[in-house]
Amino acid sequence: MTYTHRLISGRLLRIIGNLVKAFSYAFHAALPHKRFQIPRHAGPIRRTSNDTSEIPRILWQTNYTDRVTLPVYMNYLANRLMGWDFDYRFMSTEDRLDYIREHFSAEIIDCYCRLQIGAAQADLWRLLVIHREGGIYMDIDAHAVWPLSAIIKRHGRLFILTRKGQLSNYFLAAQPDDPAIAKIIETVVDNIKQNEDLGVFDMTGPGAMRKTPASVETATISNRAACIQGSFTNEYFQYIDKKEGKWTRQQRTTRVVNQ
Image (cartoon, rainbow, N blue to C red; front, top):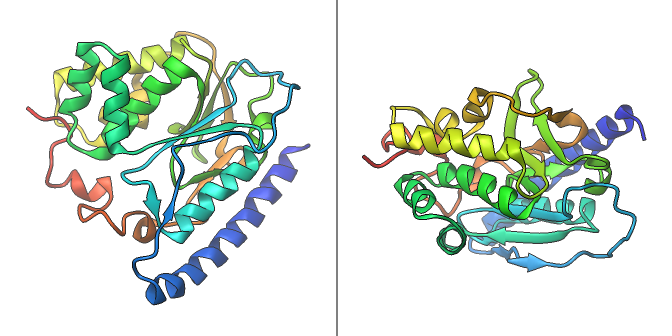
């Protein structure tokens, strides 16, 4: 299918997402404590053997809680539909720490534990889990606009570009032990050790990706043809149960790295 078909699909999903958001204000006004649970693990809806990608068919996501509002849950369902032949793996804040303690060195554990903002922890975790396990990572408010297996077809690594043509980390796809991911991890770990007064974006996020010298050729794709954010949910619905709010607010009063 053409790039145009993907754009149309993305626009249709945005329309559906906006309708979900509009309905959800009334829904959560009537049922303010109602939450939906995202599973820690869900198998593929249907397995297929026609796999032409080196990237494992695993979709990884994380959030501060697995109990979410209707819009966030609908976003999850959209990704299950687009990743119908993928395993789904979810980790909460506590799960991430347990995972890193189990699988990584004391140096990595120390760097992770020095991060004081959840979004920064999630930035490092996504790199670590993709490097160790492989698969696709997507932010909890992001969704695919096309079937995931088609997006990563014939790729061993795929990064996303914003409308400005810059790398972003809300979507990452790679096979295990990917050298480009390893280089970005090195940059993030170095940033944490140096502990300059940087925000989350530059310390652990897209800024760290862009700072990392390209050691290997990496395929990239426009976000509009692969994965977009904010169609189904927004800051209100995503952080409704987190008093600190979004990381952009939290970093105004909290250093990213504990001194």
